[in-house]
Image (tube, rainbow, N blue to C red; front, side):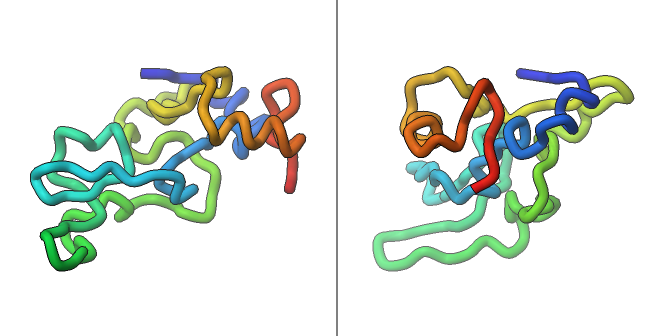
Length: 120
């Protein structure tokens, strides 16, 4: 789990608000016929869709995007119980120094500089 001082988060919410759910950056396909996006919900009943060998069906009742402010950069929505007056949680997947495509692309495009996500 990662937390950051609330004040620091709001100095650069576009960077610290990294969220695969909001970015549509990935899906996690599970053998129990569920599709998820958020890694913090892996052991929960929440998911975005169900699938079988013929179709994918949107999950309407236990949808993991339910309380997400999809157009805002916020601390991790699914770890809301961890918010405090001084600290807020970051996404489990927030790893700006990790060698992975999303960060490498931002650096290559010149959109990430000294830990800051620049406006596109």
